[in-house]
Amino acid sequence: MKRRIILGLLLLACLALPQAAAVGLSSYNSIVKEVDFQPGKEVRFQYRVTQTTGRMMDYSFEKRGDMSQYLSFDPPFFKNAKPGDDLFFDVFLSFPPTDEGLTPGIHIIYFGVAEQAPADIGGGMGLSATTSVETGVKVRVLSSNKSAQIILDAKDVNEGGDLVISAGANSWTKTDISESYMSIRILDENGNAVRTFVTEKLAIPPGQRVNFLPIMWSTLGQKPGTYNIEATLYFDGFQTTLTSKFRIGTLSVTIDRFTTQINAGRINQMNATLVSNWNLPIEGVYYILESKKANKAMTSATFSLKPFNDMTIPVYWDAAIDQPGNYDMKVTVYYEGKQNTKAGQLTILPPGIEPTPESPMSFTTIMIIIAVVIILVVTNAYWFLKNRKKEHHGQEQTKPPEKPAEPGPK
Image 1: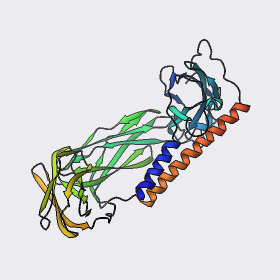
Image 2: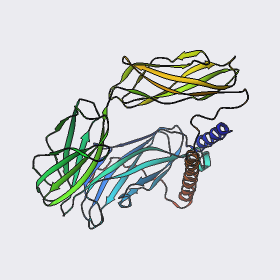
Image 3: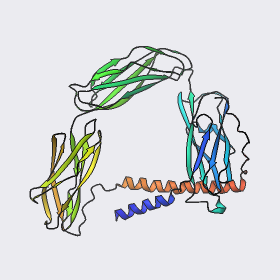
Image 4: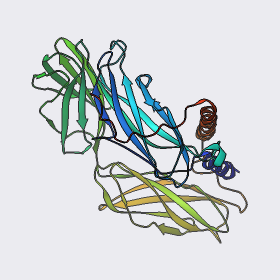
């Protein structure tokens, strides 16, 4: 019953999904533009959409991001574009008179092209609207006040290896930061400080980035597990803090879970999920599932585990002559000359009684699928109504200029 519900939801989602169509988007230099915030100024970029679908299409624009209200398009849409048409349009970024309310740093305004067949030749609600391409404009906002951002990177490492911490800082200030340095603490899973480092002191020019010397820390003698890094940047009397995580790996494969119910009278697929706790690939992994009471042992295929990853691998139990009841069961995984074992109980059910699903779809997951389907349907309905309104009240496609205008100042 649950499978039917899931398949029905997926089918509905597929029907609600737009069909892909071919749209090309291009611009001078780079399709992603970068510009500094300029109070009260207007910046213009020009783009081109190439129609390659083989039929007439309508095009409209979408935008999102925390500064998207300052972005506009001219023309606001194209109607009845013919195959092969090059549709030139301008993107205007009109900055407000002040940077009040804007967070210093990089802001990305995303915009895209939505494509749909005209309603009179088969377009409309449900199957043809699509956002085929998206790009963005990066806006750098600098502050009159002191503002900086921590850059921090620490890769996972295996026990006994050297942890490398890369640390830096971005200035989002219009003036120099005369002095900056960073204090970095390594904390164990219980929040206890294991080691503290202090970087050298550096000045940061306006709007620039500096990198401190890399920090090396030997994990020899440290327990495997997840650790926290707490980095505090001090700059001209101000400070900001950022936390991050890294893992110290150990060469072990653990057995997370395995099948505990099957049916008598048939061949059953049984699964075991194995987890790597090592920061390198582990090759040649396999497991044996056995039961003394049933006098059976099944060996899995050999496989590889990616760093800190898990895999679910099947074996097959022939229960054609097994009687319903409870059986002892043991799973032993073999890897790199090592092994790990987990014991449990297997229940063989009478024919006709379905085992309890190993990973049943939760109520939350079902609600998420339903919500996604509703969003898709509502989105398509919105674009259908929006395009119909434009058809009656909007302006017609403007003729592309013979020679594209050069981009405006950045």
